[in-house]
Amino acid sequence: MLIKDLWCKEARKLLFIVVVAALVGYGFGFTLEVLCLTLVIYWAWQILQLRQIERWLAQQDPGEPPHCKGFLIHLIDRVYELQKREKRAQLALKGIIHRAQASANALEEGIAILDHYNCLEWWNKSASRMIGLQYPQDTGQPITHLLRDPSFVHYFNEQKYESPLVLKSPESLKRTFEFRITLFGKNNKLILIRDITDLVHLERVRSDFIANISHELRTPLTVLKGYIETFLDIDCQFSDRHLLGFQSMQEQTERMQSLLEDLLLLSKLEKSPGPAAKLSKESLVLLPKLLDSLIEEARVLGKKRDVSIEFDFEGTFDLYGCPQEIRSAFSNIIINAVHYSKPNSSVFIRCFLLGRQGCFQVVDRGIGIESKHITRLTERFYRVDQSRYTSTGGTGLGLAIVKHVLLRHQAELKIESHIDQGSIFTCVFSEKRTRIHPVVSLEGNKLKDTALGL
Image (cartoon, rainbow, N blue to C red; front, side, top):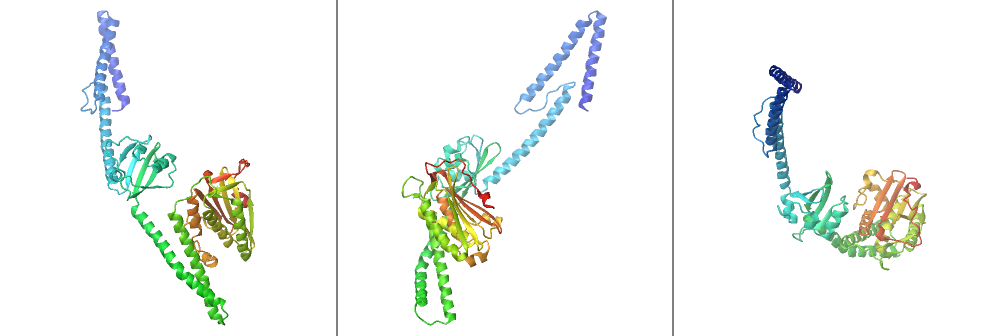
């Protein structure tokens, strides 16, 4: 029956009661009194039924509904049906949650869920095993009270979760874990913990192997190069075919020697700690002096390729860090720009301030790079086009060295490029790595990539 019909039926019933009460009261001469008494009894009966319904709804687990009459019985039936639907939905939801928790518990990775107060709500068995969480005493505890490592606390509070955090296990220093944090809901957080001990070990083995093999190959290469140079220098009459062979051998040994030097430098950068950003003469890199040297080297190389070198150095800041490493990074970027520039074009070198951050920028008018390759340019031996490296003699490690140097100096490499238009490489150093000259005003310093026409 429709709700409208039920209301009409109840209204007709009430009207009938009022009419009957009025007629009875009129017959006895007490119309108003009988009518009021009848209405009071009717409403008292309705209130008693409502009271029974209220007690039934207030129960933790309502059972069978109370027995009522009149219009309310239809309301009770509807409420009872809604309760049964809700129970079925709750059971289905509990089943989904149970299966989700069972699936999460079966994972090797640790999972922990935090509420918007950064307190633990739930975690799987792997998280208990990895970081020592205990149920139920750790439920509702702030995660930073349980994981007190300063690196984790800083990473968690900084809320820069684009990159993972790698830490030694709080339970065993022999294990290494990777922490990733994802935001969801209303500032809730999901922490994913992955055991990367084997990956770290493999990376160490790879790094040691490269370093060892590079050291072992340096001596025979040096001997081979020395003999080749000796044969080319002595006054002997070689045929053109033999002379070409010796020259090719010399070129390839020089290339292999350059490759070994880059591999050894990369290995050194990976194993040694980054230079501290402190106010000391040893850690201060004087940019005017460094750039003068780099620009002279670039001009010598540019003459061979018909590429001119232009520069704009505001002279407003220096950098804190390792001079040799920063020189290596800047040199690699400049050499790449010269190698891949078109003949009769120019390479533009800039140093400027972006707020309180120091920036070194190199712009070329070369062949450019497709956008799909840009994110992988700093990988070792990554080849955008094999013919490029064949023609330039590059080792494929230059930008990998740049990346490692900048990471050790808390700096960032930004790359912008367009095919047949050129590329922009910008090294942005953090404020603590930048020593701004006190007489310089910071107003108006902005990154002006677009001003160069790219």
